[in-house]
Amino acid sequence: MKSVIGLAVGRGTGAEVAAVFERVLARLAQLHAVDIEVVRSPRTYHSYASLRAEGGSDRVRELTREDAEHYEGFCRAQADSGVPVIFRTAINAQSLYLVRQRLQAVKVDLIATGGGSLLLVRDEAQGFYTGENQHSPGLVTRTMTFSREITEKVISYALRRARQEWPDGEVGQVVMAYKFHLLDGALDTWVAESAGRHGVDIRLFQPDTVNRNLIEHGPSARTVIVAGNEWADIMHVVLLDRFGSERQENCCTENVYLHPDLAGLVEYQTVHGSADALEGRDTVNPVATVRAAAAIAERHAGCTGAVRAVEQALESVVKRGVLTPDAGGRNSTTEVVEALLDALEPDGPDGPPAAGATRVSGS
Image (cartoon, rainbow, N blue to C red; front, top):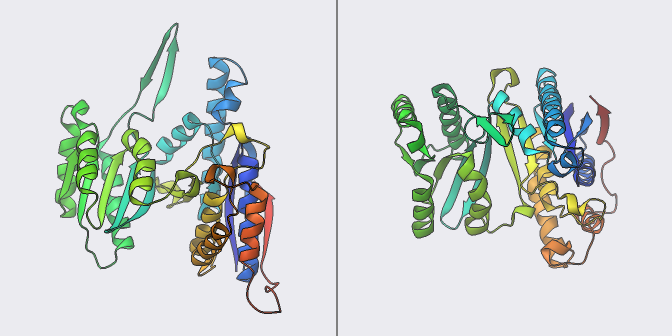
């Protein structure tokens, strides 16, 4: 049975990152004797740096809208075709957040800690990162919304996901980090109503209170944090570094679209951005992309054990000191990927099975 995976590529190092993704995915497909088709969006989406090179604010706004409309259409088309997952390289934030607002996205990361695990669910569907800009001379006015409906969707998803991650049903605590004092008591009411419907205790805190509690005590076992994206965008990297023992350059993350038209379409991305300054230099760290390819292959393409195999290969590569400059090494992206693919070689003289393949097509 063929698995189909979407691919969307942005400017900056997007083409290099996409090439890494396709190489690793093809290798995993070969090793597991599965058939994977990659459907690539025909548009190369702008990074912020590439947008600024196109002209002034009016041109940036025009291209931002075009990118957002095209990517939303690509996501909808993949969902309509039954494609369950897309890998996307970094693109301009305003284009991306217009899509996330319209398609009601959350970003999800399960962070292993010394005492257990922390499930972070970032609310990307509403709040201060969403909305439209209105320009007048010397002034930009940004308007955004919060709603009871979206708040309930985000909480419901977070609780469902927690039950999936911890199937015995035990959750340590559910915390929400929002600047709720700015919303005239409305968010307090919606959260209390949702907690009552779900029969759980949900504690709504200001972001600085959540920060203080995390710094002083760390997360308790099986903590769920549902967060406004303004706080989570800053703290995601801190949580990875402090509690997950990982640099953002090594991490991928998952976005889930909650709009009913998209049937739970999942999108993977690296945590790092477009890294335009590294474009064409073959030095972008490939580890996050490699991990995204492994997660997609295992969860959506039938490659059982791919995540563990890739982690073992990465460990071998790191022990040999094959690293890109940002990680303290002297190797190129290509050299790191080649070393990883070599480490994924199966044991035995017969080599890998030949039945699996990946095919790339446009969309």
